[in-house]
Each structure stands twice: as C-alpha cells, then as structure tokens.
Length: 129
Image (cartoon, rainbow, N blue to C red; front, side, top):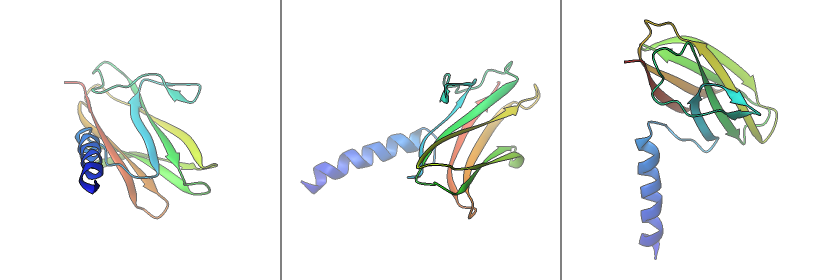
C-alpha cells in the first residue's frame, strides 16, 4: 500500500519540477502574467512576447503571516529589481511588475525570498526570441 501512495507523490513532484518552479510549502501559486484583476492573474504568460513592455509576477503565499517576502527579478545572472511585501494574513496574494526593454530578450527569473534570505522558490520565463 505504501508503494501505491508513494508513486502519485513522485509523479506530482516530477511534474512540478518540469514547470521550472522550485516549490515550497509557503508558495501556493506563482506565475508571470500581463496584469492583475480582482487580486488574481489575468492570464499566464510563458513565454513572454518580445513586444510586451511590462510583465507582472504573481504569488499566493501561505503561512507567512507577519513576515516580509521579496520578489527578486534576475536577468543575465544579475539582480534587476527587488520588491518587498509585508504579509498580512495566512493567505496573502502579492505581485510586482517589471518594465522590460526591447533588448532584454532571454531568460528572466523571479526568486521569492523570505526575510531570512531563504529562497522559497524561483520561476523562470523566456522573454522574446
């Protein structure tokens, strides 16, 4: 019986890793989107079209009430921006946006970091070509 229960868990883990997202218990959802409507992502962008000027990254956080969480935007191995949030409840949705210049094509990442500096997850997306 233990084998039967273990296999679905392993399948779920391999599917999660296949999305490029490092999952943590505290990050229930995360995605790149064109915008936010009623505190929810309008869509899912992956890859990001090369003519889009601004991109938003959305996360739903769990169990971090009273803590500070940061979105770190990374391009070419260098931090381009950091946006910090004070988490005000047991389930908290936050988002940050980044203006993308036309010559910044390639891989972008957003790392979700807690106040201790631990990376709760990292999500990657391709911009442009």
